[in-house]
Picture 1 (tube, one colour):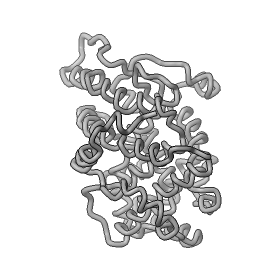
Picture 2 (cartoon, rainbow, N blue to C red; picture 1 turned 180 degrees about the vertical axis):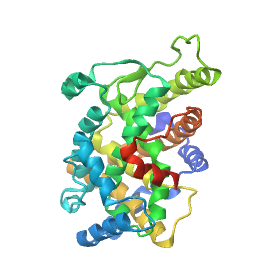
Picture 3 (cartoon, rainbow, N blue to C red; picture 1 turned 30 degrees about the vertical axis):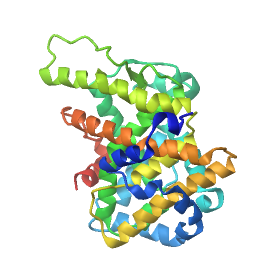
Length: 351
């Protein structure tokens, strides 16, 4: 487990650095958030949420259509049984607990969507976890992005507050901002779940060993070599030291990962939104922390404030890694292109 005093001799200095990286100071006001749990909880009628979701899909300003959604679910067997409806179970069971259940199902769907052949699909999830495919390449980032954007969209549609946002352009902004963050967080947590700390294991089970550069090919371009150096260079070692290893040490759970996703999604610093969206985002950000408190309590965790503090301290290195990853993928020519059946998402991200 991370010890705050050991990792951060001056918490004020650490907080200042996080604020300089763009983190909202409000997310670390733990006691205020905890004491106002009941006040900040969002009570949205489930019928209204469903109406807002349909409104967004059918809005002429939106690029999402019911036909596109049906086509994606019909063509891809791995998502054919996915429930896109917003359930009221999160209010009864707790949002984090519901997201944990969803993640376990979505993780298997992700594995199947990333498979390259039938043999890979029929392998059991537990068995496939220990099968590493080899060093990662730029094409792995391209393939992973195509799958993760679809899964990210599924996940976001499960959030009550997202469906409550009225302006489709506000929703598009949130989705565009979150795509790489979702991909980065999933790659990190995949390695954490496997308990591996000597390499980064991407969600398709290719891996990056810091400093262990794959051999250059005879016809390899200068840009390709530059990307390879960025993938396997010093930053990859920092990602392990500052994120993967600490999360393994504190026995990071799926519930905490879901909370980290929520906090990251609902902290869109530096972006302009409509007044209604800004209010909803602030309430959702507060709820994310409060729901984690609730989940900790339901799971009978001890030292809750310490664990929550350690999670918030991960936001700064995550932001640093995101900036580096953004610069890297800009150099990959085919990165960001989705499958034809997911063109509706391509339009949203390009809006």
